[in-house]
Image 1: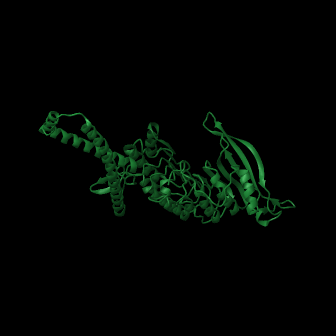
Image 2: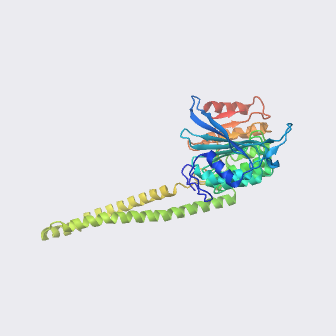
Image 3: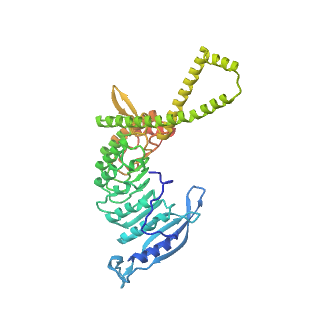
Length: 461
């Protein structure tokens, strides 16, 4: 599937709307489906970036799109201390760019009721009309698993790559379905969602190679959840083969030394299992087989393209004015040993040039061999297969967990190892945050890490 920036949004044949105005679409759709909840839309206009690089917003307008279908419904009202019940409105925030194109949509502060499924289903129908909408968020709302499933069904019809469900507490939620094909989610935030080890295990399972999400998800924020050592181990096992996740935030969880050390071990050099080595060889063999097929096709095209100029040149030669003497002389000169050797040499050079060009074309079409245990990360030590470690993860936040001095010693090994094997393309960890853990104030390991911090790394204790 193509990346989000250039992919074609799947068409939804349920309803095609020409009007690109979000408010008009919502009013029309809520009328058709008789949505029982009122929705208010705050429209924000993006301004140019400030001197600090922060994008500023200005409120353009704020109004209610549609009133509830019924004057009183238990499912959409909440009783307060007042004499009469107060209607609860679903608040939405729409952000437009400077060309007044919708780029971000957010549903916020819906605590008095569960977000109606109809709202997500309505958005699924009209979402294809907004090809620049890349960010979608549901924050501080009551949700259930049905909303998560509807969200997963909505994403394929959109260009959304950033999903945020912060402060939405769903018991036993299957957040992993959001990352499954055909959705392309690059940034996922699940802060304060009561995610436990079992739910974290489900998320980690879709991040392992060769799962679909492994090739797309870049940032994962799991701050302030209930993830312990078992959940951290599952994420660590995903990092063993994941080569696209660059940002992992596990701050304010229940992770101890056992889970943190498992994560650090996969950032170090580790030995491949027999199954991993067999699969690595199989994938490389399939790549070489495919490359040979593409190479043969390219060589065939190059050979056919060179036949035409040679034939045209021979026709011109026959049409030129010649005499019997000249033909005899040319015939004798043509079959002299030096001429024959020169022709053989030229033909050999042309054949070599075609082989080289065909190989370059095959590599350009297929691309290099990309594998978690590819040529750049694989090494053999005493005839045993090893991987140099995960050098893709560049940001790791383990602040406010239960880490001790034991984790700090392994982290120092990670820093020293990655300083040796890091390259410009695979730089390894650039920032690790360990605030709020039970670590010593001063020790030899911290002094060494601070020394690396002054060189090229950026670590925070």
